Image (cartoon, rainbow, N blue to C red; front, side, top):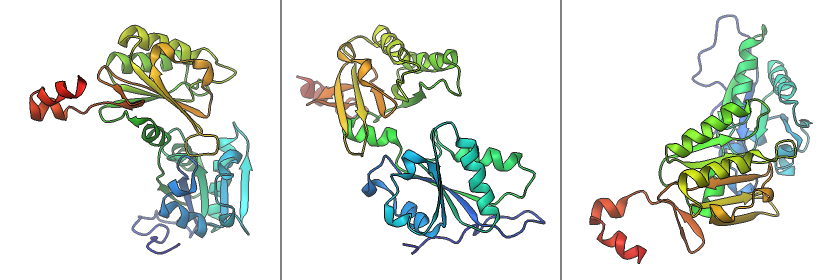
Length: 278
């Protein structure tokens, strides 16, 4: 598994006075299925002696890669504690994997690890980011080809961002005719936010605008839905779902969402495009 994996810190400049440490790998597991984990992610997991993460994400790591290792798995809202533990373990010389779902730099732990390292008076260990398949890409693949043109991602979680800011960002994306991907669309503590955004989308883009939802992408129990905004039931969404709202050109093709890039308009002056729509 280690074939082709660069040694920790290779090519990185080290500050004067730094002692030898391990590496914190902030690692993306992808949407959940093992066959969607990258070879590099699997190689890093095999290499690391400490695995850190939210307990739901640690459960996605193949069990053979957890055997004989120290595992630090905690519940929600303990992100700072987990990331601090990872940095401390690396300072002792251990290689540590901080596991995230999707990609570690998209609504995940990569930024927090850097922030904690910067704020600590202790010497910072090496930090490397191991990318993963983002949830938005996994969901888009299941729904068709909805991200063929410009798109925006907005999280509806107000745990770290005020709702007024979230609503403004969603409105701007809709007014700008971006395909809109909604992370964390609905929870028990905020059951109405998704409905508000869907109402705004219907007003700005029309009730026939294609939309889609994927729940548990790449995991057991996976569910998908596509249809017009007028038929979207926000109560079907939860924190394990991702919602996509098409732009003004997005169409449903045999039940799949497709956002044309514009090839027919450019290369056939509309004739072939018109033929396809008939």
